[in-house]
Length: 255
Image (tube, rainbow, N blue to C red; front, side):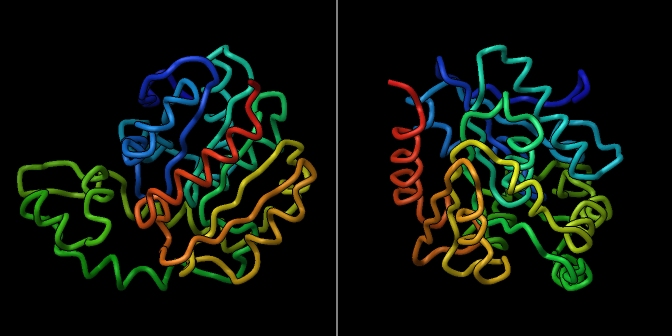
């Protein structure tokens, strides 16, 4: 993590809780979740490199993102953190727990799997190319991306001709390409702390892997599949997501 890496302090005190966003997102997409999480600790979100206000320069391997997360937790100087990640952020969360066990008390992974080998980013290109960029207004962004309009609004910036995604799509392709070339089961085997896996009913991940992820974590894993949800579970079912995460935090946090 460089000195310019962006960290959002959502407030709260005590137990550090670190929020990691998914590909294309940024820390502020977590705002609705952070509002109730502050009852459980000091909540901060990190803009992953190439996203938000963090440096938009490589290299882009998972290990680089994990090093940034570890540095952030050390800077908090408040003991091991609970790390909560969505999609890409979920991957970074459990790899951080495996590589830096002294820094992580517990992990929440939302809709991410350890082995996506064989998948390519080429299947996404036609969808991204269909976007009416530049968007004419934030209302235009919300309407185009319904039901995730508010989520995508956070990842946009205004330029002279309208609104554009802050993150560079070519860089995002590079980041995601790695997931189709390697698996992360070795890191799953290194997670010695409790881990909660929240899977979408209509998941973007290979079938069965998220339940297996929870089953193979040495520190003890729990797998929950929330009905009626797509990839952004915390947006599709906010009340159920809050209930599941809160129950988990009550089990893993002292007092």
